Length: 309
Image (cartoon, rainbow, N blue to C red; front, side, top):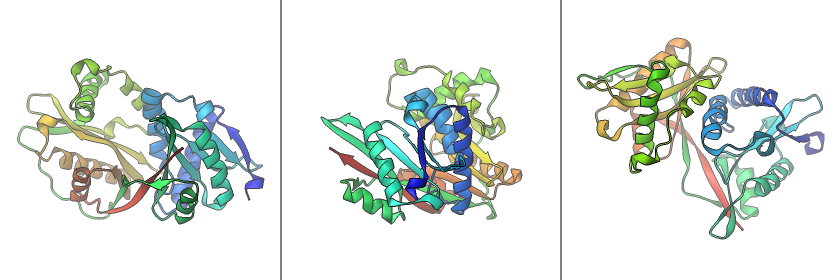
């Protein structure tokens, strides 16, 4: 089957939209299980992770395999530095295609670490053929899985009262972006000095993503008016799936139930929009416990396989 496929590099924004449709098709094909990225994750990577952090040249970093009529069969791309994701449509899965994709990934995405080349490939826990191929090529499974959590929205939502004086609302206009950005900085960089903060303009890129909706970009506000916690939801009306990315609470406001209250409010909002499934990714035990407390008890694992040479 691989002989029928044509390989080329990413060329233009037309390919960005083509990959969006491709990922949505695979997600539905796989009964909304994350054997490949969901649509929101591609948007979030394109407009935030890559645009604001890594700044890969898409024309050099993204590879596409197509059939003669232009239909996409597979996409290879990085996430962070030294990582690769192999997105393959089930109709075209083969060991030969995986080998070709891995050969390109090892050439294009490996990073220098401690004097060696190193690459990490992420694989679904039940994708045993790809796991076996990686093991034969010298990759070793790491004990750092991503929990791909999901929740059926037909199940009832628990009451999650807010602490006295706190409120939940959607994010405000651009005037509030500096405060929202500073909150993110403190949540994800709690031990770094203030002078490392690099400003708030990056949030404009987040809001440029096609799936972004301000009514699903939620904040919890403290009694003094300061932003205390946040969660952003991405709703795909075609697959009727909503995803949380990111979620966080300022260290000074943790252990008050703000995260649980925000998640529940987000679930109610997307349910009213027609979502039937919600998802969220987690790594740590504490994050997993929070998500499980609002019904995200089912999950798959995406596992990191790493090779050094």
